Length: 373
Ligand SMILES: Nc1ncnc2c1ncn2[C@@H]1O[C@H](COP(=O)(O)OP(=O)(O)O)[C@@H](O)[C@H]1O
Ligand SMILES: [Mg+2]
View (cartoon, rainbow, N blue to C red):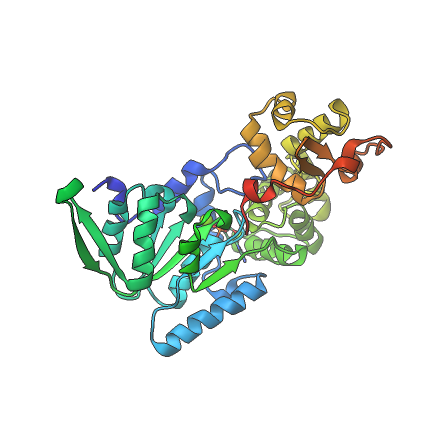
């Protein structure tokens, strides 16, 4: 059995998650650097502490209460949504609310069915198994998981070829909590075996502001309401980004001012860090800028656009574009990327009468590129 088949400790899990983190920008929604430790400190511990996501919270609360009532393990739960919205937080809360031990692993760590068998065979009655990035599990492991989820049993295959034998292994009832940024990539047999799927949405500004206030309280940062609201409004609807911007603004407040996060101070700090009023960072703006100024608003191929801003194509596609599309500033069309009127306006440019956005079509590739959630 490979090393990854061991149960991960929370620290190892954090380190593994770090390996996927993108350290390019202040507004990536992935966790990065020593952020993991700070995040752990800011995580809500109970459903009541969770801010926003009312529907998911209520649905989840019902699932858990009903299970407690029946003295049974809760149904398997799938948490779907973009990075930084609270999937890991909710997984930890599910275990805490059930007073059950949480076991953590992630799709990429399960490369063989044997890795999963090892984890499952170590489970106890009522354990919560959290599989992050569950869409990245290997196919044979996925198939083993279907069976485990449905029948609490797996067949462990020993040997190869004609001499191989399948040994049935009973598994105590457990709850699987899967998290994915790309629910669309999950094969339907796997998706169908979750009793409940929670779709996390980007947060409303009011909820984000409450999150900033709560985090500021926990970090001991003084702030005014306007200061907190300003940070929230530049955070792209994402708690992880809100918490990160708060920490950078706090640094600025401590070094350049008396430590209090006011509106004016938040403006100055975030301008310094090049996060603009809509939450765009330098890369986002340079993509828009190239699109509008150099390519007359497009259509232009993403590779050409990437060269123009001196970045890898993947970075433009995966880091900058999803948010620009969400903001309605950029459209992906079969003929290439196109700037919308909102892009020109955001850059403070006159919207040209002959710009190509008339040709823009709905975001045809959004599903494929960003997954659903
Ligand atoms: N609803 C929420 N209320 C308060 N803080 C939240 C909420 N959702 C997420 N956070 C904060 O955002 C950070 C990232 O959340 P996390 O659960 O790690 O996101 P994901 O696993 O979806 O990427 C956590 O540190 C947590 O403090
Ligand atoms: Mg997570």
